[in-house]
Image (tube, rainbow, N blue to C red; front, side, top):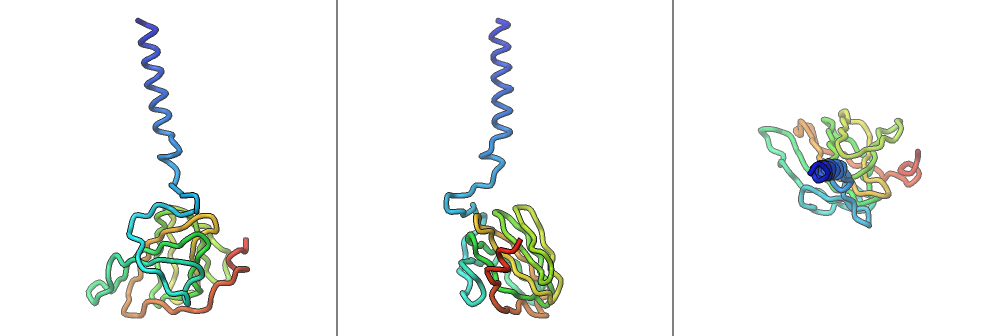
Length: 164
């Protein structure tokens, strides 16, 4: 009886340890082609003149005259990125899945992962996008849209994207 009780207790403890530390539970689910699970619909593909690779935008909160804030989701396929651009009133990014990068012109490239946030000041040139190995999903928040939304510029070169 004591043996059965110890076996039952040991099995229960092992079950709890494995279920709490399961890599499936803790790891971001990434498919073989580097795509990540997304929490919003894919949305519409962004225009090729503003992105290298494929990026998909989905509006979450439409711009209006009451809140003057635009909120949306962008999913970047692995290796894709925005062009250099600015936002007249700044931008906030919340990374919801995957891995990627953000860079303010003249500063080092910043690695991004799920849970990271980025605050980009008004009228500051920057870019963001997915890592070569993983897609990245982000929520963007654009405040004070009465000042404007985005000013698109030239493409981010491979040398800039691949720089350490």
